[in-house]
Length: 262
Image (cartoon, one colour):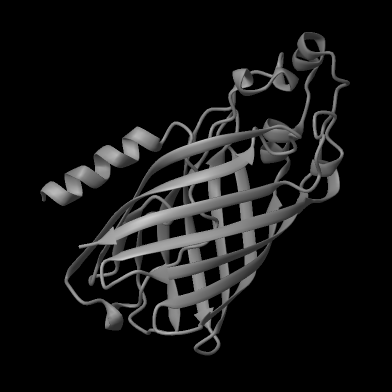
């Protein structure tokens, strides 16, 4: 119970600016060693100040992950949810995820646009392993944006292979679609924002927001400690790329995570 309370405290600590992964990546029940499996750690990142920014910032936050053999999970990357499938090759279920905040104070280029607060997004996910190395992944999330009516749908493919007993590499390619409410919140400029910021009014339509390629390398130092280092590169698409405050259409994130498994 103490470990679970610690997970909740960590979640509240980082919720103001952390963001859940688009896809759920959990260990199938058959491979879990315990009824409750807990991992703690820390992450360091170099990221754009906001999506479309040509300025960067450094960030660090606690990492946590807990999985139960029942199918429940709660983590900084997967969110809070439940996997209903008992088949190792198939995962599907419901979850709550986080869409990170975009604070106006983060960059002078956001002046006049106002804040978009962190949002809790109810949604669903489905993953299908085609083989030991390849999987199809997908998710749908609702509730982000200024009025909490943003909808996102992500699909992709994941590759993972062991280089040795202690080293594994992974790569994911994905496309993200969003409705007009999401795009208006994160890329649009209404009349009031235009007057305050100096940007022209911009009303984006629903569509594909970006294509992203991610790659990572996991180094298991021993049976408990591991380090994951990686990067992701996106290409903004459609109306998202045409926003008047998008100055970099190819945002890149670099990260390193150190974890300890109990």
